[in-house]
Image 1 (cartoon, rainbow, N blue to C red):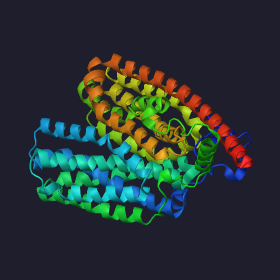
Image 2: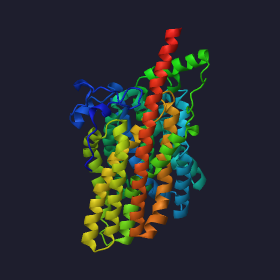
Image 3: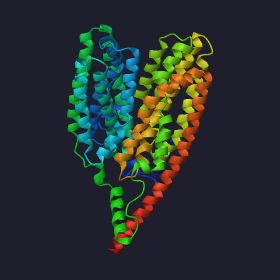
Image 4: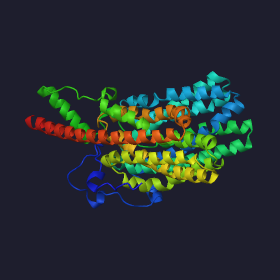
Length: 475
């Protein structure tokens, strides 16, 4: 990708999460240490709490790998649902699941994140273990919807947890979690493949119930992390203290009694970020839905190319996520990297367009190259999206803002496959080139809008800190 390494003055992130320039370069002790992935997994940012959460993430995502790989076959082979019913079931569950992140974000303003995560995992124990007892479309729809809702909500709480625990090193924590999650997905898919190979109803049910029971272990690991105050309590951050000082000064000095923009649904700038982020997550749908469908229907590539694409994606995510995280570190670097995401996606789409213009050899080579380029875009996006979601949010209302930000990926996963199959693939090579061009343009918009918001946020916090100091001096 040729991403330019962010300068040290831009790379640091304060605990409040503004990601603004500090004016002085951080010391060598503050710079990211270049150690191996295994060493960082043993000593991640956040210490013991992060180790326990990473272990919980591994079990969680291994379970997701099992469930996502086996659920369609389970619904069709054991539950005897038609293809239309399976599509409707997954579509409805996905749409309802969009509500999971904002609900979890609002709860995190009033409840500890640990409590919400444990509740989500325990609900999934009940829903997944009850799947073999459900017969017919409606019962299966209910348990699948509840599972999806808790899954989406828990992912948002994982972001909040990272901010609370890892602080300024949350980008490193994010990269480590991506390594762990991709390895776990591969393990879960392998377990599901064994169940499919055996093919008996008992094996399918054992895998689903075993997956459900595993969430007891996930909940136990989360429960062993430290209990932290709800995000709405201020979390003891400097930014929270500044906000409280400003509020106190406002009440005594006649200023505005409530800072604007604390409700994410009334913050146009943040909603613009979330809307753009929907499109800047499309690499997920392209790799999981677009590439397989395109390879099968519009190219002469052998079917073995499809699992090869997934293998390339998994290996790159496991082995290259940490090196990429060293280059995309900090809020401003993340905002700039949004452009590179668009360029990489455009290059991947161009390779997909070319793959349908020749024989089997050309199709195989171009599809493999597309997998490499699109996975590079994914590696960048996973850091950019998360870092900007945190850095662009007000420091004293991050949980509710992150809940709204979590809707971007949920919307992409619900609408992305439909848009690709009915629009892009139907248009052929022109569709791929058009999609790449649109996302590249939106990446530029995301960069400009994010940098402007970071500048305004930095200026606002500087003014608020000065006002708070003046109010204290007068008192």
